[in-house]
Image 1 (cartoon, rainbow, N blue to C red):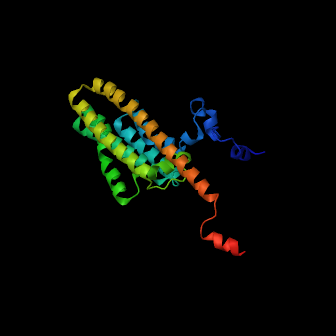
Image 2: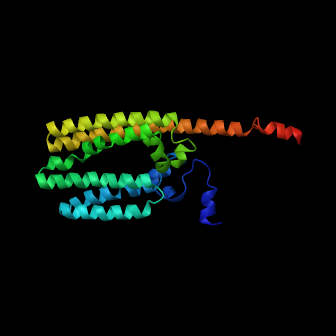
Image 3: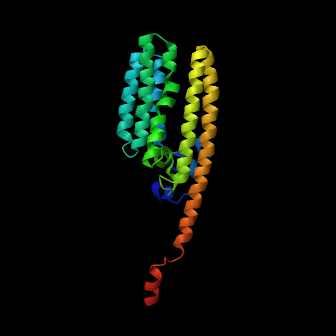
Length: 238
C-alpha cells in the first residue's frame, strides 16, 4: 500500500498528511485543518519582520518582495490567498517606508490599524457583489470546514458582516492606542487586545460555519435518498 492510498483511507476526524507529524496540529479535527497554503501566505510578512531584526529596512523590504514572488509562484490554485499575502506585504512594507521617510517608529507600527481600515471597502464590495468575502476566502482557507456551502450562503453574509465590524472596531482601538500610548505600551496592549479577540472570533465563526455546513450536507444526503418528482413518472412507466 502506497502512502497516497493510506492517506486516502484515513478515518474521518484523524489528521492526515504533514499535519500528523506536527504535535500541535495533530489534535485538530480534519474539518479545522487549514489549507497548508495559508501558512505560505504568511511568508512575506514573516520574512520582512525577521530581516528587520538583523538588517536595514531596505534589505527587509527587498527580502519581503522576494518572498512575495515565491508565494505568487506556489499559490496559483488559491488566488485569494495570493492576494492576501501581497496585501499584507504591501501594508507592512509601506508602513516601514513611511517610518524611514518620516523617521517615526509609530508610522512603522501603523501597519496594523491601516491594514484593518483598508480592508473594509473590500468587505463592502464583496457583499454588494453577492459573494461575501468570508465565503469566497473560506473555500481556500478551509475547504473541509466549508464543504459544499454556496459562496453566498446566509451564514457567510452574517460572518462577513461580523468580521467587517470587528476590523472597524480594531482599527479604531489600535489607532487610539498608537496615538495615546508609548511605543512599548502599544506593543503590549495592542497584542493583548488583538490576538485573543481575533482567535476567539475565528473559533466562534468557524463553529457556526461548520454547523451550517454539516446541516447543509445532511439535507443534501436526505434529498438524494428520495427520487425527484420528475423522475417518478419515468420510473412508473418503466
